[in-house]
Amino acid sequence: MSDETNNPERERLEDLNIEEAAGRVTPPDLTARILAAAQRGAIDDAVTPISGAHSVPRSVRPPAGRRMTAALPRRNWQGAGIVLSAVLLFALALVAFVVWKGPAEKPTGQPATAEQPRDVQPEAPGASPKRSIPEEPQEREPEKQPKPDLEPRVEPKPEEGTPEPERPEEIVEEPKPEPEPRQPEDVVEQPGPESKPAPEPEQPKETVEQPKPDDKSEVKSTPAPVAVAYVPDGAYSRGAHHYQFRKSPDDEWAKLYSQLKDIPPSNDDKTWLYEGWQLRSEAGDVYLTNGALIQLDGVAGFHTFANGLRIELVEDEMYVDNLATTSTVQVTQGELLVNISDGAALFESRSGKLDIFCVDGQVEVDGKIIAAGYAATLGKRGLSRIREATQRDMDHPLLTGATPRQLGLEEFDSEPVGGFIQGAIETRSATELGTDDAGHVAIDTGRDAAVAFQFDGDHATLRGESVRVRYRATGAKKLILQMFCPARNDNFGIDLEPGKAGEWHVLEIKLSDLRDRVSHKDAPPPGTLLSSFTLALTGQDDAQLEVDWVELVREPRYGE
Image 1 (spheres, helix red, strand yellow):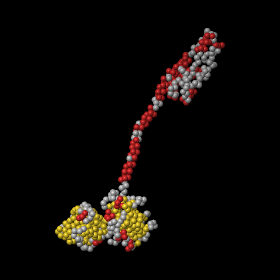
Image 2 (cartoon, helix red, strand yellow):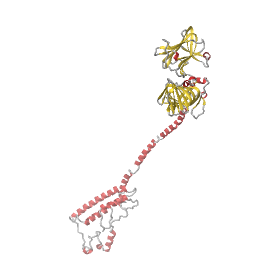
Image 3 (cartoon, one colour):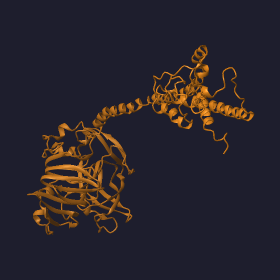
Image 4 (cartoon, one colour):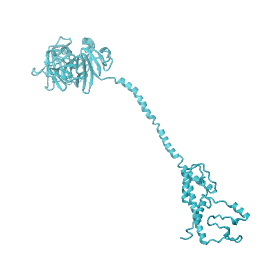
């Protein structure tokens, strides 16, 4: 290794130059000291700025006046130029690094020259120089612990470089200027106006508030409860039955006829009973909306269920005729239940039990069938042994004294639904009809006068059924009543003697009394389909026949 490459003094000078170029170390100002020594002629006794082992004392130096310094070899000058160039480049790189790095980590407004804290003192000329590598922590220290109150030494070079840090400050201010956070705030502000739809959710609140009054109005219209049954006006005219009703078991009883006439769909012919209402009657007749008849002597409640109507027998007894209707009727007492799909039965409430007598068809209890002519008792433990009905059962007052069940009625207020076969409609006054009100009649004239019309669909006959007719005839010698059977392509009929001419009569004929018009032997059995009705006469050429109404009824008597 040569002396040039292994020269600690040279390395120390290079490091010192680098430190001075970087501004970390300021060489001492010896101007005043040199001038003072020159004045007193002691300059030769002064120690040269190069201290240490290389300092030269006066005793070994040439005498004053002949002093000279040997010239450095050319090779040393070239090496010094290279070293100086390297130092300058390194210094420029270091200054650029400080300018680029330092301001980004300094607080806003801090000058770029505040790189050295106060506690960093310049090294003495004789101290061993520090290499640039260990100096890096000194640059990082302001990053970790910035001191806003540092007072940097005023030096022209750093001051000239102060505008340069302003550029990074501008760069810092661009990310810093919270326009970007403000942009999200602007974005939030944009949904802010979108939050104006927030009042739209308030509109549903208003809509919720609006339905409340609407609901009140709906409550007023919805209480139109489901109609379950009605009492015909004819029941009031008989005067023997007193009807009272209440809308719930907690209400007081009130007269039915006087208070319900204004409740739709009440009209001149019937007074309606609705879901949940109760009725109290003394052997009065009530019709269900499916056509079934109830004879009630006690208290009953009216309800609906999925497959039909339900009647709750609260007190006493009741007769139900649900033959040939459109739905099932349930009879209940507490937890006890009886189904009547196609039948008629008498029910009597007794000490938490229900006595059942099947008059016609059949009834079903807990999967067991009670046929016509049989009776049983239903209790909490189930159905008792099924027995044959007694004469006492058959002679019950609700069976023998009740009014017949109406199966069909034609009053000729308009042309029959099925249409006329023969006859026409005319108006008659109350006097002419012999009733309280005016009305209409079906009329025909001539020696073969007749009133005939088609039913609204075929009618299936029932056990105990009768046909009733109110008529008036003049000039008649004989009357013929007949009903056509499509299956036989013939009529079942009967010949009758006419009543007193010019007067109104009510004719009632049991269907079991009719005979076929060929053999005059066969009667229509229950279930026979009939499609039309005819009342005809034979008599004089000027004979006349008037019919006020035609009615099909069934009396609640067993075995007929």
